[in-house]
Image (cartoon, rainbow, N blue to C red; front, side, top):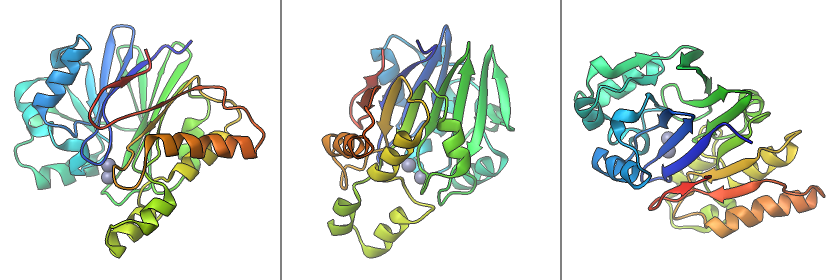
Length: 258
Ligand SMILES: [Zn+2]
Ligand SMILES: [Zn+2]
């Protein structure tokens, strides 16, 4: 059984925050919701922000850092990201308190949990995903990537909990109301991952994770049921059984794997 518990506090283009816990260690990936909403969602699962051991920021887009300035003013929890992501964040928002900012290299030991950062392919300064390792378990978080790079595939392999972007249904996006330029951006190799690409990554993994959480679904260009069906159909086509717990994260409510 996985050593990690995950609570997707919010997920989607309006804001992202994920709680990843192991034992009494609690980590957050991204603060793309207001600090007030973060506090209230943490309270729903019996936690406070002070109990967090660290926050890991994937990239500087607003849906990942919206509550960061207030968070760094209110709390003394260390916040980690890459050097170039910090530069981009601080350029955009002078209210972020520098005393909270820590640069993460390739990896970090956080009270017995190894946290590793890895590059994703997205139109941000230096976007990253994160893998958490503890007691032989691995939890990998990867959203906001235009395609499955080798490093993303390697990080997803062997994870027993995988949080994976399933941003859009390609047909819904193509026939939808978004301006052409935005459609092209989302579909590009530095855009967002489609349901199909997520499904193919999973179908090609030598061993399936115990828990899979589809994340960062577009409210305009996707439906939870469609994301699940697309993944299921790819598995059916490969004659492979989808032998995992498959959850879909949501924008407006908490989704947990515990
Ligand atoms: Zn982004
Ligand atoms: Zn995003």
